[in-house]
Image 1 (cartoon, protein in one colour):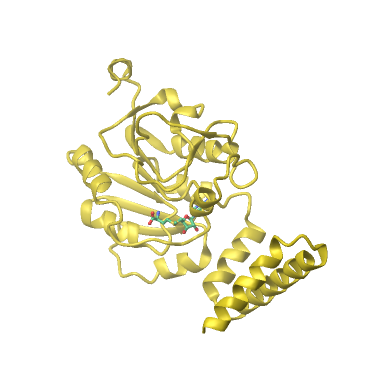
Image 2 (tube, rainbow, N blue to C red):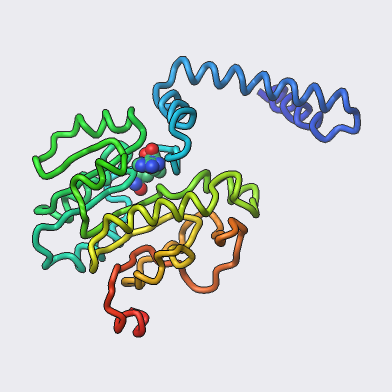
Length: 268
Ligand SMILES: C[S@@+](CC[C@H](N)C(=O)[O-])C[C@H]1O[C@@H](n2cnc3c(N)ncnc32)[C@H](O)[C@@H]1O
């Protein structure tokens, strides 16, 4: 075991070697390793294949690629929204990027009478969603503008850990410009589309995203609602030019769409 660790250390030293041949050996072995590893994952892991196909054939529409999710992942946010929406009749909710469905199953617990639509772009995850035993007022659909429109407009749109890419990597590498990984324009275009499907006095919940709703062209329609925030988001925040910024204060997660200008002037 010890000799294996020593060998690994020696191998990584090649990367910083002053000898170009040693550096090329390092590069060659790394590429070969990635190719073997990629092929192995492709052949054995259906989740890996689903993400790869999505990136290859639907890259224009895909935001976050990882399907990581869980039940009741954001209890404070769900409770705050439940509180705001408690008296609303014929409630319609959209979970945009619902992965394998746990977010929708959680929303059903918080909103027992609502019509809930979960949309997902990863076909493998969507198949898993469609196996859940749910009531007739829950739907899982492939994520297209047409499908979203068909059951809308909505009183709440949850967009949790979707409008982002590789946040851990960005944080670890201290990446300063996101334009190649996840440009602002892609984020803004999606926000504008979602805004189109949200009722006035409805909630847009935007959690774990490196960009700010306040930077988008629809910002003027929204006011912050409540205290839920993105303080524990691992990534930095970025501006309209996809450049890293320092944010003073907190970035909120829940926004109320309101044409009541009085609320805007109060900074509600
Ligand atoms: C990290 S998961 C988040 C799942 C869930 N919202 C949560 O917070 O637990 C991100 C999901 O967004 C999905 N996604 C990415 N782009 C999408 C799009 N354009 N439409 C719908 N889903 C999308 C991914 O396939 C993935 O399942």
